[in-house]
Image (cartoon, rainbow, N blue to C red; front, side):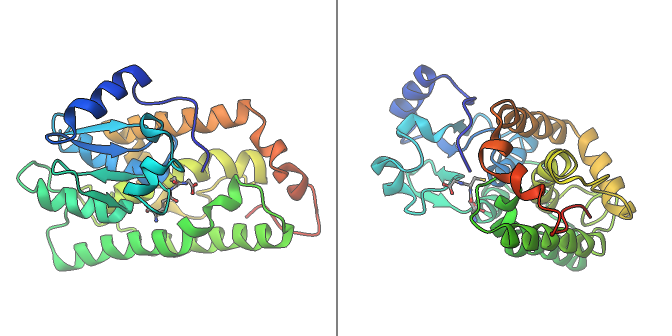
Length: 262
Ligand SMILES: N[C@@H](CCC(=O)N[C@@H](CS)C(=O)NCC(=O)O)C(=O)O
């Protein structure tokens, strides 16, 4: 994913942060449009951990592909948590689970209170991470093959139906918000913004009443609303820069030999 021009903190503030907090305050490297990192931002805010963890853009140390960042995360991806002891921990779901564990005494727990609830949350997160995240770029990245893009859009439609069968309501694992809601919701902001506008979908939630009701519940949540605004703001920035035209996506979707809308 491309870095958005918007950042959480001004470069000046962030440079200052990098200098003085390294030994005492953890840092999450992320940007507003990043759906994977949004699950960690959601947890940090829900648990009120802003005093313990700063959220800063990777640009503060030269960007995702800079030697400084790659030394911390060789994958060159965000999010990345650098703990208070200076340990770099990548991978958003691993970071989420670490935050739940490390800050278990900060409510809400964001963990379901039955084995079945926890399994349901883990299942939804796993479906999202294994079958959706690796292909989400088909919605907004340049791709050589129109056929591959079309197959991946079809796969997203399929996985939405799988998730409809998993979500319990009102939240993924039942009555309480868990880390699974934090993981899925940001990606649905992508679906909701991109699929109708650029791929001709009428309604991402058509025929999926459980997901529809969950989506509305999440948008009403204070932290959910904040994530919604952050990601939509980033996507709107991409739209304003004609991203979908310039990445050749509009041309792909104009090819009526393939199905794009579900
Ligand atoms: N499995 C990783 C995926 C991380 C990922 O793909 N992050 C995106 C932003 S949401 C990224 O850093 N993209 C930049 C790139 O790949 O160059 C996770 O869950 O943290």
